[in-house]
Length: 155
Image 1 (tube, rainbow, N blue to C red):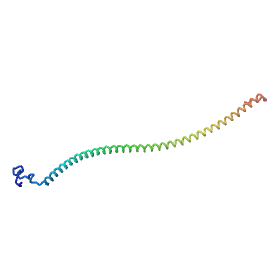
Image 2 (image 1 turned 90 degrees about the vertical axis):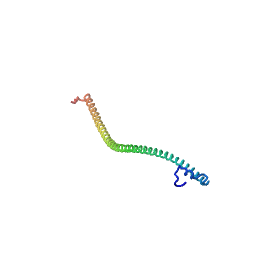
Image 3 (image 1 turned 90 degrees about the horizontal axis):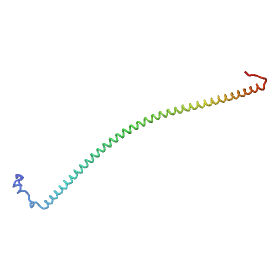
Image 4 (image 1 turned 60 degrees about the vertical axis):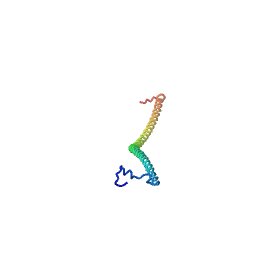
């Protein structure tokens, strides 16, 4: 084919190489290249499909990671709030423990005062009973004296 022959013309057709013009090893090599090109195209299509699946899987993984990150952020916020509340509870418990300790000391003081008051009452009651016994003895002696004695009258 001459460089001046336009494609699609009779000269281009007549001057085109024929099967007989090419050697068999060249034709075999050409057919192998065609088969290899078809295999490569099939593999490329398979790779494109696999790549699309990988992209979809990566997008799903990204979405999952974002959900997990948001959940972790929420959990961290809740944990921080719980720790703050726990710290406040510990502080409050410490204050309550101090107040309870003071109340226990106050109660112990009141118990000692009550014990002392009981002892004082017991002592006063004992003294009163002794005095009542003495007065009873004196009264009994006085009655006995008025019936047996010379007639002493106690005023």
